[in-house]
Image 1 (tube, rainbow, N blue to C red):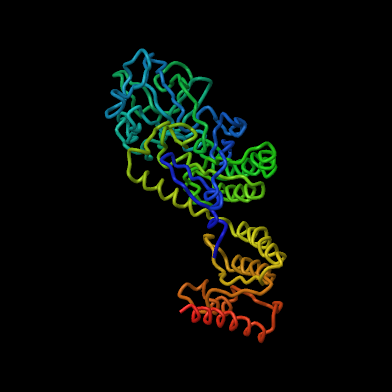
Image 2: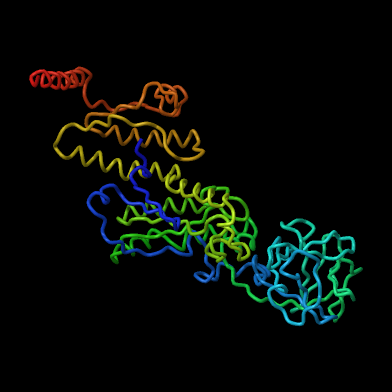
Length: 448
């Protein structure tokens, strides 16, 4: 079966872009691309639409925010010497990279702290020093922040507060609840940079329920079919659509990412077809983040894509997924009605030979399609192919692939024939086919 995806040529580039264009365009010579990027739609960039982040509590402390802490009692900065790898101390009068930590947000008040070198602050919670040696975030390094203006208290899950002791170390052994005056458990917090506003920050900032609502509304309204009409009317023949790696796991991507971008991409393909626009699909945000920027969905500004072969292989898998251009059940069915029907009707009205759909099948590339979806897809094809002036033939009667097996489809009620119109009676059909083969055979004999 030739689905919508089968009508496109996919070209790959090192930048992770997929260009989709028709075979006819490739043969006849493509026109020069005059395109517009659909930035900020399926990959969030906060500077494009800042209002997306307005409802996040503690929105100045999103994932990747850079912070510094100064002891109000010692007037020294919390420091991870050499960027991490040993205990945390208070011995710096001026803050620089060792004194700057990146937030990993667990909730609006609970955070983890990552050092310049990539390690996480952690404590065993029994009064010992806080270290910067953990290579990954764990419960040992999960802290609750209590804020008052520019001051904070930092508390472990066991209830102990962090404090600056007289020896210049950060320890987790302050008893009771501290006040906001200048003492060992109170720190001045400086937000050095809060410049990451991407998909990770939005989804993790709102949480799963609210972020689903926010992003659903954004995807449905930020780019619409009317925009494609506008672009077409103004001479634009191409759109470039940035997507994130989590689209390959839609509709249930790994947390905190939110599903729904694949359905929006499917809509874009249909709108593009309606208005004669080509699509360039750009893997804008690859796993691990290529550049640490918000548009690559970095959590904390780290660029780890090239550091792990897994990220590279995962990226290739995403590109392979995008190349298959999987469409939703509804989009495939709509394609049958909009495209296949128009083709059959045009051929019927051309006053040429009778139209015969010689091979079709009730199978597609839709993932996890239900029986009801298959019934609808099969019904759409039957309604369209029944209009062929000569008729149609299913491929094939028996097949190891069950959805290609006509008998299996009928017996299991995946394909419901019902009463179909008869284009020609059996006698005339039989005669036509025999005559065709006889003519071909006689022609072959006379040439020998």
